[in-house]
Amino acid sequence: TKNPGESFHAVVPEGVTKLGFRLHAMKSRMLVYTVKSMTWADLVGLRPGDLLVNLQGKRTWGSGLDQKVLVATIRRIRPLEMVFINGTIDDQTEVVAVRIQTAWRAKWARKKFQFLTANATMRVASAAATFKGRAARRATAQALQPVMAAPPSSSGANSHEDDRIAILLEELSLARAELVELKHAQKEVVVHTRQDQHGHREMVGHAEADQPDRFEGSEGRSDPP
Image (cartoon, rainbow, N blue to C red; front, side, top):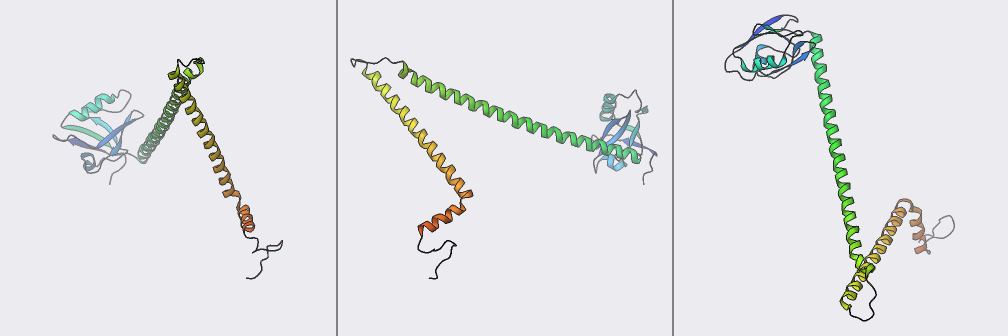
């Protein structure tokens, strides 16, 4: 059982490369942030919330703390002597609060990244569609430009050009006819859809009109067969 506030020594021997714990600086103190199971830190009894107070005979808390030097020392020097103090309930609670806040920030950052990615994808798709629309209109204008600019031929010397103009006009007429048919078909689909949603009574009326001999009277009475 670990007593809060009690100090203990830990030595990292030669050959140990991964210690299995992470430190977090809080208010000029180095707190154990996480501890992985079945590692050196777990075997010596480190727990989240413990304080690292001494490293190789040097104090690790206070305003003069250099985190880069501390991390480099922990990674490179072997054997390595460290002194920890068992964390209190407040220290453990502070570590848990920081971990929750960090997880929330990471989740928010992932959502923001997903939103920005989706927004960028939509903008790229919209730009591509706009470019395709402009390209199609430009190609149509270029195709119709000879038709609009061609002078009328009276002698038949430009028979080849006249044939080309006639083919372009015929294709334009066919395209317009197909467009009109598509619009009519779309209107029919909308009308049928509205009838399917709101025309239950109309369907019943059609059935009565198709079979007038089966129903008599204004109240919907029927004669027995």
